[in-house]
Image 1 (cartoon, rainbow, N blue to C red):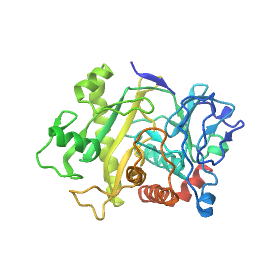
Image 2: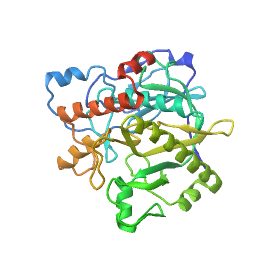
Image 3: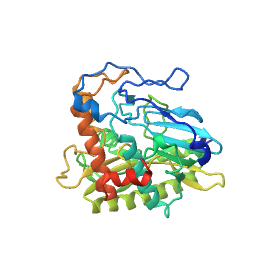
Length: 349
C-alpha cells in the first residue's frame, strides 16, 4: 500500500515562525524526530562565517506540527496540506554533515518550482503555492497537497554512471535491463532507461530493483508501466531543455503519488542537483568521471578525508562550502536562465 505524506492552509502558515540560528552544528531538539548527528566543528575564516548569516540548518514553526525531518527537508502538517521546507543541510553517503551550504535549500526550491511549472502538462504536481508560506522561509518552502506516495523511486538514466555503472560492470545490466557490451563510464546510453529503486529509511541506502520486483512492491504492474511512461517523458523534456543551456542531464529521480481524487501526481522535489546529476556539456568526454553541478565536490572531499562513512559526518572546510554553494547557484542560473536573485525576489525571500 502507498504511504501517507502530505501542508496547511495559507492563513495558518502566516503565524509565528522561528528559524534556527545559523549554527553549522545546529541540532534538532529532543522532542523532534530523527536527530541529526553531532560532529566536531571546523575552524572558519571571518569571511566564511559572515557568509553563513541567514543559513537555515533546521526550523521550528511553532504553529504547525513537524511530521518528519529528513536529510534536507522539514515537513510540517496543518489542515489538509503540507509545508515542505528545504534546509541548507547536506549529506553524503546518507549521513548529514554538521556544516550547511548557504542558499542550498533556496536553490532546490527554486529549481523545483521552475520544473513543476514547466512539466505540469506532462503530469500534474503537488504544488499549491511558494508564496503563501511563513515569511522567514520564503524562497525555501512550498505549500503542497497531501499525497498517498508510491513506495518506489522512479529513476531514469540517460548516461552510465554511479550505481548503474557498478551494476553494469558486474552483470552487464542495470536493474535487469541488458545493455551493449563495452560501454565506458559516463557514456550516453542508446536510449534512456527506467530503473526503479526502493525507498530507504533515513540513514539507509536505496536499493536498485528490476521492473518485476518494483511491480511486486507497488502491487500494480499497470500502474508501474504508467509511472515508467511518465518518468521517461519528464526526463526527455528536461534533458532537451538542459542541453539547450549547455548541461547534460545524466540521470534523475522522480517520486509520484495519488491525490484525493485518485490522480497520479508528481511530488517531492524535481530535477534538482540533489535528485539529479547535471554535467557541463562543454568538456564532456566519456570514459572518465564528469564534473557535476551537485554535491559531488563534497563527496570527493569526504572520500579524501579518510572518513569511514559512518556517523558522525565530518564538518566541511571553508573552501568546500564555498565551492559547493557556487555549483548550486550556477546550476540554478544555467537551467532557469535567470539570476538566482530573480527567484529570491519572486518568492519574497
